[in-house]
Amino acid sequence: MDTKTVFSLLYFAFLAANRTVVSGAPSFSIDYKNNCFQKDGKPFQYVSGSIHYSRIPHYYWKDRLLKMYMAGLNAVQIYVPWNFHEEKRGVYNFTGDRDLENFLDLANQTGLLVILRPGPYICAEWEMGGLPAWLLQKPNIVLRSADTDYLEAVSSWMAVLLPKMRRWLYTNGGNIITVQVENEYGSYYTCDYNYMRHLRTLFQFFLGDKTVLFTTDGNTDREMTCGTLEGMYATIDFGTDVNISQAFSRQRRFEPRGPLVNSEFYTGWLDHWGDQHAQVDTQKVSRMLGEMLSMGASVNICVNPVGADHDNRFRSVVTSYDYNAPLSEAGDPTEKLLAIRDTISKYYGFMLYRTKLPRDLPEDTPLISPLNGVHDRAYVSVCGVFQGLLERDTTLVMNLTGKQGDQVDVLVENMGRVNFGSKINDFKGLLSNLILGKDVLTDWQIYRLDIDGAIASGWPQSGQRRSSPNPVRGPSDGPVFYQGTLPPNGLAWDTFLRLNEWTKGQVWINGVNLGRYWPKRGPQQTLYVPGPLLSPTQPNNITVLELERAPPHTRVLFMDRPQLNSTAGKTSQLQTTDRQT
Image 1 (cartoon, rainbow, N blue to C red):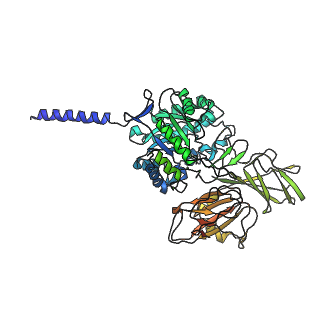
Image 2 (cartoon, helix red, strand yellow; image 1 turned 90 degrees about the vertical axis):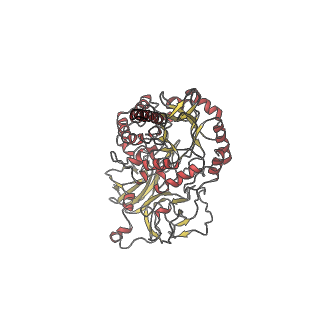
Image 3 (cartoon, rainbow, N blue to C red; image 1 turned 30 degrees about the horizontal axis):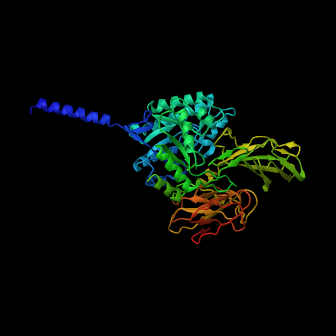
């Protein structure tokens, strides 16, 4: 065989190999003719589960993803909370628990495809639906609209986020198959198509016009009308309380051809402080999931894992995101997860306002928030002595006594910004005047308290030498910090913290904020403590901010299981494996 023939054979072999590469390039699209997705040229149906990387310590990401994969899921659906990555305007954080690309890589290694939901609004029972609070520095801003200030901020954020996501698209060798634009926009009052057009243009510019973009809306004509737009595939969401055929018929009115998709199949629901723990019947979940899959529908199994709601009044959501979910907060498989597997075979902040009494008040004098301007809960002291509290929508009057010139402190707690509906412009602090008798209180000094930052830096343990020489040992009324330690025992396992007989506040362990406790209001009674937060060899620092009144014993309890369904005033028997400190 001569040299020319050899080179000719090599040339044609190269062309054949190159054609193989081209024809085998990953692809993902919508097949409108056959009413399905197509992955690499073949019909594809996904069964995904929602997982909130922003609510899970990064050292548990792989564990949670592996459990979802072993349950039979072939994809995961993830929200990207804008305010988790840009807490301060122009300062972006994608490290540690915020390392989104690391999460995508772990999902890829596990064999899970990704449905990306980058917002900018995500709901997710997350503070302000994921929108940064610094947007409210523009007092007249219209969120989720074509408002110029809002679009400028959104465009800047997407110009940072979306280029990071482009290389993770399935068509580029990654695992992102579809990308949602906004979230349940049809439920919002603005119904601004120019806003949705702007987002569509942004997403197509940064991700490419071949990327499958989609919208998700609730099961009503109004929501589907305002939330959908040509060029973005319209999907629907619903739970176990609806007729499946009727719901998908509504989707068909907006998307006559293409795959049936339930983007949020609710297998659980959120809890508010003071409510019963929400539960959804496992068998009903399993039956309905089976029906949808038999219809060829793609389904995302959703639990809306912190924020607040505002229907007829403000209602803060509990700390735990274990909303009767298939995979528990601690990552344990539940009966519901096993049933799903068989069927298919997841900021708080404080402001201090300080002024002086304008005159002597020898008798009880009403302090009034006449325009319901306390957002959300205010703890009032005079000369350091706790007087009482005001609470949004519920407690608008309390009494004060004191002398002219006495220092008045009003500590205002942010209970979470509204994350759904027309009231997400949820400003915090004192939003209107407080009236004391016939006087309007004025001349306020205002302090933003970075409690998280102080405790993360080692306070109060590191600052004991600078603290009062006679610290309070017993319980007292009003906001008080308590500190203690959990002795090491050579183990660092997941556990659950219970504050039995404490009233309301927050807890930190080794500088990490575990969240709120409010056992008297319930239903949540315990806080999840990831094992890696604990040291097996060094004393573990515990800091408790009790806002109302601590119990005489000032003890906390570490338990081997959560208690999420106790109602106010009820106490369950504690396990013998518990530890007290």
